[in-house]
Length: 124
Picture 1 (tube, helix red, strand yellow):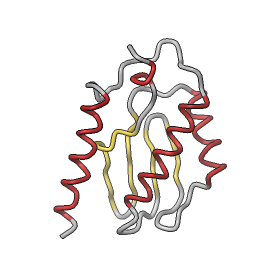
Picture 2 (cartoon, rainbow, N blue to C red):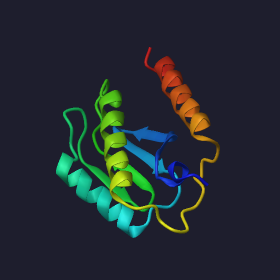
Picture 3 (cartoon, rainbow, N blue to C red):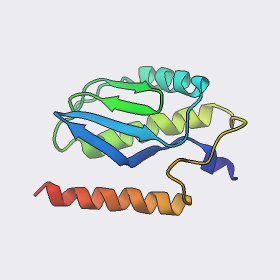
């Protein structure tokens, strides 16, 4: 399995928003070291943005408070940056499992783009 496939990613298809609170799953099971590094990167970048409140990670779930309409794109960029930086700073973990979402990187990206495009239908 390629190293890139073993890195944690946000499973955007798992996104759920309820009263402004967003929950997102991570692919695979992040180790304790990965979760700790995620928290440190989050602290350095500041977890709250202009269009959302605090961000926290518990096990394999990222929770974002108080997401405001029209801030979804900025939030995605922010969270992807935190995950990419966390992945870059940690060596590949032995025993990393295949992503729970399965499929190739292209399939995952296609699924993410499909979900984003479909979300535009509910915005009308």
